[in-house]
Image 1: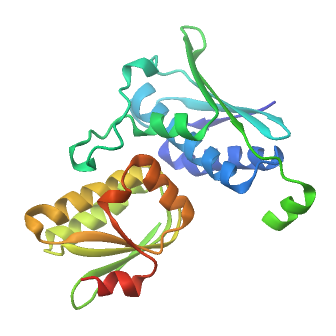
Image 2: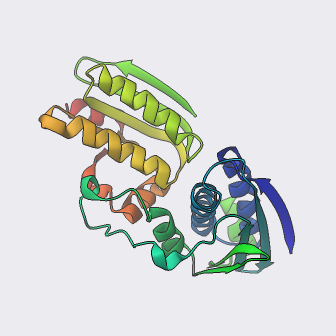
Length: 147
Length: 111
């Protein structure tokens, strides 16, 4: 498992996406799955800054991953306010966007794009988010073609 | 992210280059608001060079659309979106809210 702590700032988002995209490549996930991982981790990190830390520069986002062929586990930790996903109302994506509240879309993306999403909180370790992406495993030939 | 706007006869063409995430979305929002406040309500967003958009970026598009469509004075249309951007719009349920054209010429010609 590899880990890097990124400052909890929106300017870290590119590096966070890149960190997990590389891991997804190493897990030999297909291109679509890699794009989906990038979007899910971006939404997760943005939510940590906005809601757990309630602003930029309040703490780090610790990013780790576990890589297996065809499977990537993303782990993101923060020491901000406890996050309870059950308090976030799922958006009704069939409603006209004009009448929708600008909340809950990030979590909806994470749940839709990843195969599993789990949150936990402890007063000692803070928030921990674990997301798993299971993708199509590319053969060496497909991997070369994708590049 | 780079934003280049060009005033055409019937609309404004806005070329966006780069990623639209929580870091850059406020810049795009500001640029679109400035155009709308100047009385430009018919906007073509060329997204051919946008390689990433998050929910923060999608809401910027929706907010611009809300303002432009007010009083039936115009609208925001999208041109040259990649599959990745299309998938994000679809996942958010925003596809029905935007006309999407395969290239800027068709998008500009729609006004």
